[in-house]
Each structure stands twice: as structure tokens, then as C-alpha cells.
Image 1 (cartoon, rainbow, N blue to C red):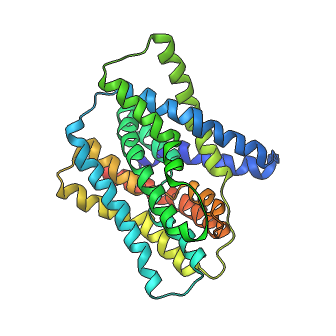
Image 2 (cartoon, helix red, strand yellow; image 1 turned 60 degrees about the vertical axis):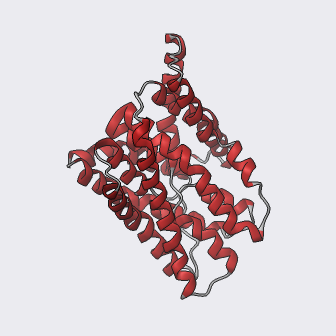
Length: 298
């Protein structure tokens, strides 16, 4: 119960974002600006700030990342299964496929920080930085027949990858910035969590699954239940324990990323169905994530 209560502020911020968008009528341009600020400035600062302050155990990184990748690959395989039994437009299927394994980095880093502090953010940041390219490659590959987007360009300009890389380079070099710089990064990091979660709430959409409800329900079960179970099994098999084990299971239990909608729209896909599925997984994670966290922490 204490763990569940600990996560309530994060989910309250998501609901606040939904309420602000509904009742304050700030317009799409405002929310697009806030999301760019969080994505390109605040969250990279959060990653750098957490990683440079944390002692890293690189020997444990390989089984940690192997477990995270196994969970994502399990999501991809499970998302492929319905294709054998159902008929739907190829573009709709390609759009929804990515919702079986993509993850919301904002919520992942917020939850890791709330439960485990800077070491949790650093560990989650390592997973996110390594997993973003895999998620982008798989998603673009599935949608590639129906649109054009440069996957290498998308990966190369991803600020979460750059923030993670910069943090690890500084950490391994033993460089600690001057106190004013550290204070500056900490202020940006503090702002990133609140604004990031508010933008998640502002993006919630609860309509748009006409004709694909069965597939959407399957993907919700895959994302919120099957992937954490895969991470539990693989993590134990590879000998993960303590923080690494807890973080990778929580990573696997994250709802679908809002970037799945952006990619679907950019490549001419079924953005409306993807937006609904992202929203449903986010709202569902408000129930499942605290339960997974409570089970992990005991």
C-alpha cells in the first residue's frame, strides 16, 4: 500500500494534464511546444544529472540490457500472433504493432526516480538509451512500406540517446561539473518530471478503435502483463537482483509511448487507433504499475 501511495503523485500529474487540456483550452500549439521543451531539453538534463551522480556497475549492464531486449522482442512476437488469425488493413496493423513493445520514457524515468532516486533514474536511463534505437528500428521497419522516414536520422537526433550517452561519457571519464552547473542541471531535472507527466495526460485520447478492439485488447494485455512476466523470467535466468531486477521489470511494465502516435501519423498510418491504445495503456498502467512495484519492493 505504501508503494501504491508513493506513485499517486505521478499519476495525479497525468490526470492534471488531461484536466488542463480539457478545461483551459490552451491549444495544440502550446502543448506541442511544452512537449518539445521536455523532450529536447529537460529530459536529457534529467538523464545527465542522474547518471553523473551515480556509481555505475558496467559488469551488470549486459544481463540488464539482455533482459530488457528480451521483453521487447517478446512483445514483438506476441504482437505478430493476431496477424495469423485476424484480417485488418495492413497499415492499421503496422500502426498498432508498435504498441506491443514501445515504452513511455517519461513515466519510466519518473517512476524510477520516485521509487529509487538517482540510481534508479541512471539504471532506467541506461535501458531507455539502449532500447530507443531498437524500438525505432522495429517500428519504422513495420511501417516502411507505407511511408518514408529516415530511421538512422530518427535515432541519431533522439535526445534521450544523446543525454544517456553524454552522462555515461562524463561518468566514465570521472568528470564532475562545477557546483553551479550541477545546480542548473538539477533544476532542469526537477522540472522535467512534472512537465513530462502533464504532457502525457494532455495527450490522452479515448476514442478511435473502431474495428480493431480485439487486437487492441490483446496488445494491452501484452504490454501491461506479458512483458513484465517475460522480464521476470529472463531476469531471474540471467541472475539479476536488487535494483537492476526491479528496474527492468518496471521498464517492461510501462505503457506505450506517445511517440508511437507521432510515427504512425508521420508515415500515414492509423493515428487515431494508436492514440486510443496509448491512452488506454496509460490509464491501465495507473492500476498495474503500482501493483508490479508493490510486488517487487515487497
